[in-house]
Image (cartoon, rainbow, N blue to C red; front, side):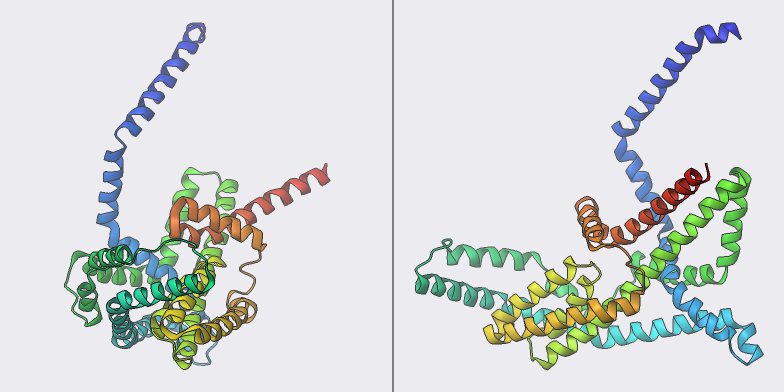
Length: 375
């Protein structure tokens, strides 16, 4: 024992040295690790896709299952799980067919028209801006028409519009990605069927390696985190879909050109709280100004502003409930930080992540306060 104590410092230094070498070699050969991770993700992609599909569809599945449980018919109550899963996938298939058959071709036609008219719109905008500078005797910056046209041509050449037509017309080749998606759908069905067994197996493994008190705390946090993320993303998708349809209808009534593209864009950008709506509306106003003139752009701005207020004060809270029970400052901070580190994906994920962090910190502080008051 004394001999061990004598050399304990040297053993500690040796362990630190080994750890330092391991860390250095890890970062020195980081590309090997990233390649291995990418290879594993590629192999497991059907299961990852299946997990995300099951995760999103789990909420409507649970709601239908609860409705079936209240049924007066014993058969429906007994078979509520298969009925709920079958109903959800049937609704998803119907929505998919409607989108592919109607919405996708309409978006493609709008995109094609916009693609071929961009040079004309750019030229008109350039002329209007130059005229405004001349009329007001102001020169904000010099515009070289040839350079602008050249830049637009290069951008358009980089976009292969013909590729979009294959998907719009339904000509999709059977690639590994498509195959993975269909396998993912099958995997998601089995995940929804066996979700209780999967959860029980994970709990069993956890109880083997972690003490019960800690395990119960982890399970509680994971369950609440899952509730926040699943409800948040499901409600966000519903809100985005509702707003996309609503904006498309309103823009079509106003006879705004490219109403379908702009409506869908506003709906998609609505997935990012605060910033998404502002950015999408700004693009819509600019395009309307170029294609429809100042008066139509002003009316479009006013009506879009009213609809955003309706969404923010009525539709959003009705769908989200108390989900976004956080200050606007915290949400803006979360979006800014998430977007700065992880881009658009980070902007979408950051809000529920910060809500979960706020929940954990609040629980920790309450526990500390109770212990302090108990003393």
